[in-house]
Every structure is written in structure tokens, then in C-alpha cells.
Image (cartoon, rainbow, N blue to C red; front, side):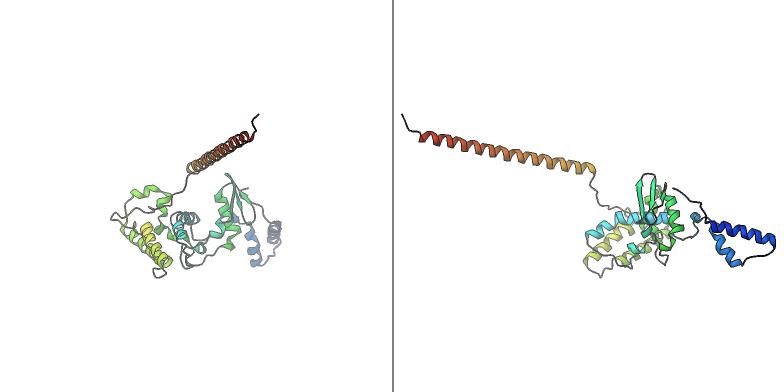
Length: 272
């Protein structure tokens, strides 16, 4: 687990041959040397750099899933592919969905099954070994939306008390409103219209320095484990109660029938 430093044996052979060639006075073509010696670079050090923060993209995705998608699903609304919060517009989505966590200190790559003891090493593994699965086209970076989605407030609640920057607030509000317009066009029906207004209240109205509404103020209530356990207990008690009532009434009915049968038989007996 963790980082692997194993190198291909052919690279070592080439290196020895290269040193020998320098000693004996002949040389290999430069292109061959550069192509093969690249194998000595550590791929886990972020060899393929993508200018998109994975951590902030992860925070943005979490906000979308917790504060937006429950309401979208409730309206049975399908996000258009042009919407930047759409699943397909997250450069890291496929990789993130191939993270397997089997234990508190064990993360596993869903592509090659390699194991790591921390998520950050799995992220580096994705960057170096499975970078070909990234869609690095324009507009695919969710972290670019963090200003509009209030990522900083989720990561650091102390920023709620920080001094407001009017220029930054105006920029984030403009980005936020453009997201509302592209994801929930008001001319696409009543569901889109309602979600458009909700998105403005949930994310955009707070982008002001004049004391606007609180960001991310609405969140679906999750039923706690205590509520679930209490509900199960109530159902069991009701089941036992109605079972007792049923058996009790059944017993009374049977007893009444037995008494009638005894009485009827007694009347049929002839006197001596």
C-alpha cells in the first residue's frame, strides 16, 4: 500500500548502456534517451498536472448533492447537459466514483484494485496512472464554481465573520445567476421555474455585502437513527397489541360457542 517506487528493468539497462557509451565515446540518439529515461521520474509526484483543484471540486460536489439535488429529484427534473453542475461536467467524477473504502485506513482504486492507506495517495495514483480518464475540456472544473456555491463557508465557517469584498460578491453573484439561468431555464416549465427561484434563494441571494439571506439555508432533514429505531419499536408494539386483541376476541368467541354447545346438549337430554 502507499507509493510504489519500482522501476522497469529496461530503464536501468538503458542507463548502464548510456553511461558506457559516454565512457567509450559513442552516443545514442537523444530522442531514445529522453523517451526511456522518463521512466525514472516518479509518477506519483503529479507528473500530469491538471489546473483544477480536486479537493475544492469534491467540496463543490458535496454541496450540490446535499443542498441542491434533493430538490431537483423531488421535482423530477432532468438537468441539461449544458448545466455546469451536471454530473458529466465534473472532470473528476468517474475517478471519484471508483474510490473504494474497505476500512478506515484503506482506500482502493476501483480500476486496478491497488490499495492505499490515505485518500491523498489514491488521488495521486489517479493523477499519474489513470489521468487518461479525465475530461479536461473547458468548463469541466467544478472548483471554478466554488465562489458561487459557497465552498469556503463549508470548509471554513470562520469566513462567515470575515470582511465582505463587494467586487468578489458581485462576481460570485453574476456566476451564480448564470448557473441558475443555464441549469433551470424559466421557459422550460413549472418545475424549472420553481427550481430557478430556489437556486437564487439558496445560493445567489447571499452574495451581497448589504446583509442578504444566509447561504445554504435550506437542507432536507435526514431521519436520524433514533427516529428509525423509535418507529420500529412503535410498529412492534402495535403489532403485539392488535395480535393480543385478536387472540382475546377469538378466545371469547370460542368460549361462547362452547357454552352454547353445552347448554344445547343439556336441553336435549331426556328426563328420567
